[in-house]
Length: 375
Image (tube, rainbow, N blue to C red; front, side, top):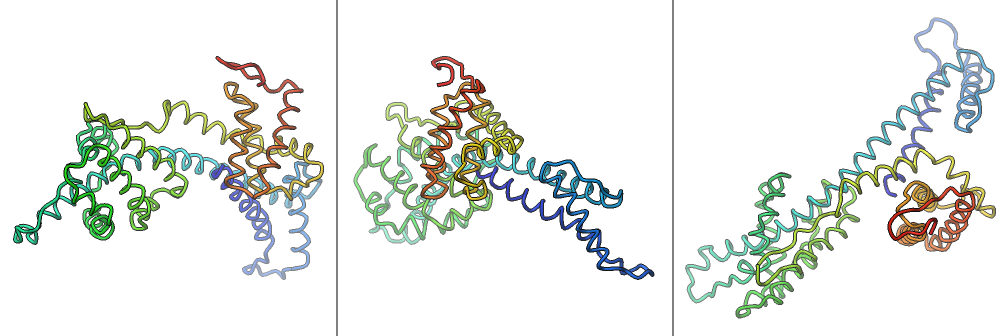
């Protein structure tokens, strides 16, 4: 949804650039020895702009001199070429951003280990050894969850393959531990406790991750530099890390390294196809929305509502294994979470009537194990 929205914004900019191209083509030639008639140039610019408006209005270009038609066609090619570039760029960005969720999930697991290592190094400093009366506490360093993460061969293998580590952030990690973890009252209480059990180990790791790491602005900044969708993606990462922490098996001492999806290649193809189909069939879907929103002009419909409805239509028409009801519910949730406070009801109503229309036309065919056609 976000990347379709971004594409629509790029499309609007390219629209303005196309008309700007026409204006530039009819600017007075300051190097010409002939007198430039500004009024005539303005009139010619208007003619070429009208040809371009025909194109954007999905009409055949009206009759015009070759000169003006050529300028208008150049503007069209400029528009289409730039839109194509934007579509490809945003598609690649969307897929790489999604894949980056898995990288950041692994980096957070590694960060927990790095903070535990720093806690151990901190207690080995001369200020401790020179004062034997100060008791050294290693609970967090020896935490069973931390040890399981540290010893996970799968994590080590994935991190090595993806070249994921915190080697360039040694100084920052020291500061994060000193300023955020070491001074935290819950952490200090855990460090002072006598032989904490598995429940306490899991609880403190989850606490540090959810209440310190994820709420740390300096740490968030590191991830935001590489992920423009960090605010959204961090929610998925939070769920993945917490699932891993809670998965510790006390007998084996092993944890589960969570996958982004059960079948990323299949999901990757779904994302790509949904994005491209929504953009490709924009005009067709907009026409359908117009037909079913008689009391609303398309211009009055919130941009995100329009995009959500078009994506839902694309999904209903092109993905036979997804039930219509599932599609409708998913996109209602999207509108509820990201659009206006009235969007939920509007999107719900629109998708209900559009789905019925498409089913009446026999355009929606659902099939697959456990599915009843068109349900």
